[in-house]
Length: 375
Ligand code: MG
Image (cartoon, rainbow, N blue to C red; front, side):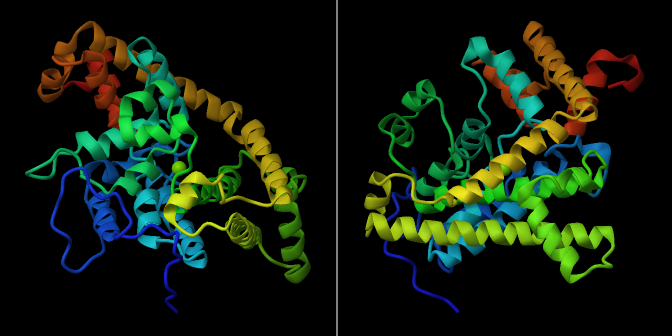
């Protein structure tokens, strides 16, 4: 069943278009074209070997940034369809939202940000934008992917004020505190629905958190009790999956219902109304409280688990060592990165490191710091 888009949805017609004018695609919408360009770019393929929580070599069953991005796109598309928003735009933003992540997840990002503090800092949202605006080398007549304005707006989820000022038009909403499209707002929630729930699943699978612990967390416990009541003899793997899928569904339904109410109450009729209104996509207060409890649990018991922290400490050391080595002697960089370092050394080094996969960063570290790994 295809419904017409809501009047305040982003479309090819009300979009602010591309920085470089291009002929309209023959058979696709502009935002389908964006989605396709993202899937074919180099940074997208690298997501397969970048950490979500676990370092990439730890196991084949855990989420990577690639599977995370696909899950965000799946959740985002269903939310968008229910709210009659532009599914193609939501898919494009979801698939590209993590392109700028460093190797080793947040530990890598924090380490690179510390290294870059004296040189303008490092923000992964801004790096995602830098990739699609400048760094990808695929097209004859422009750098980057020349994406639609609203896709780029959605990719830039957060931005510090100094960086917002440098960005011009795209940064203005952070200064003026205006909202992005509903599609962009929705992607942030699809992202958190995806990672909160798959981190429960991955944490259990890794044995770092337990069912008993989670039965003290409301967001999990109430669905788990439901499943046990209906299927008393269910094995643990199926029990977990049935619980997690109910959690995702409950969060999605809550988000759709509350957002629909907010949109109706705000009386928005156009995209410009959406930009001027307060944020309209969101959970109910009860769901928000439940999710806060879940997030605290995940932080304390999973992200700060001593085994995870040990991996993250090693990851941090790899990033800092690489950065320091290249800064003190840029001749250690591969030739194409040496050329770029001639213009802005710290930024070129940050681009090189941020583009690495987990395993490439570890290999590069061995190549620089150990004789055992040769060239
Ligand atoms: Mg994400």
